[in-house]
Length: 244
Image (tube, rainbow, N blue to C red; front, side, top):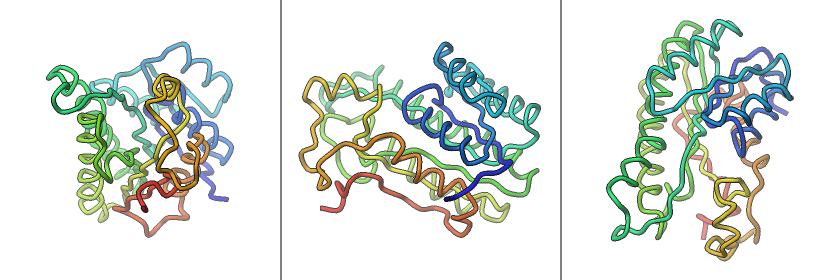
């Protein structure tokens, strides 16, 4: 299995759901993690569970100053910043005709600008270290059209463009940038939608939703040295949803 021995990983949206799953797997594989989230109670609880290998920082991904604080905390506590997992995101179900300007802008601020600010914030630290891996969490909504997810899909397609462009720009510094695109995953963010019946397994060849750990395994691979020649890639973790 891939290892992250001695590496410091920043995980946005790290307090619960997929972010918490990434944190648990990464610490099992030898990493130190900085959990970045607005969910204070959940974040502190997870950091306590993970022990000396984790710290929690209350922060908002839409704030460049908060990103600066997180990177400084990571370097002060653990010495380096080796990996960034841009995991934080929000999902609002709206069609083009029903999406409000406020909802669209908020989705862009969190899902797209948050990723931009995160990548920009860690680059100086990674350049100092002479290496780095950035994993942006996209979605199958960024691979195909997704009715009822107009704003969300727009931001996830944007993540693909930012990932590939950053991969080309940062390769000379030994910094790799890749994107993981989960399909429907059993997380708190999708719980209400799954319960309402709006989200079903129809159209998923594997016939089920993913669990967070299955996404974390793909993120782990891209974060580790096992993917040392992989950059600018899109990795779908979707039960073959986008393959048919």
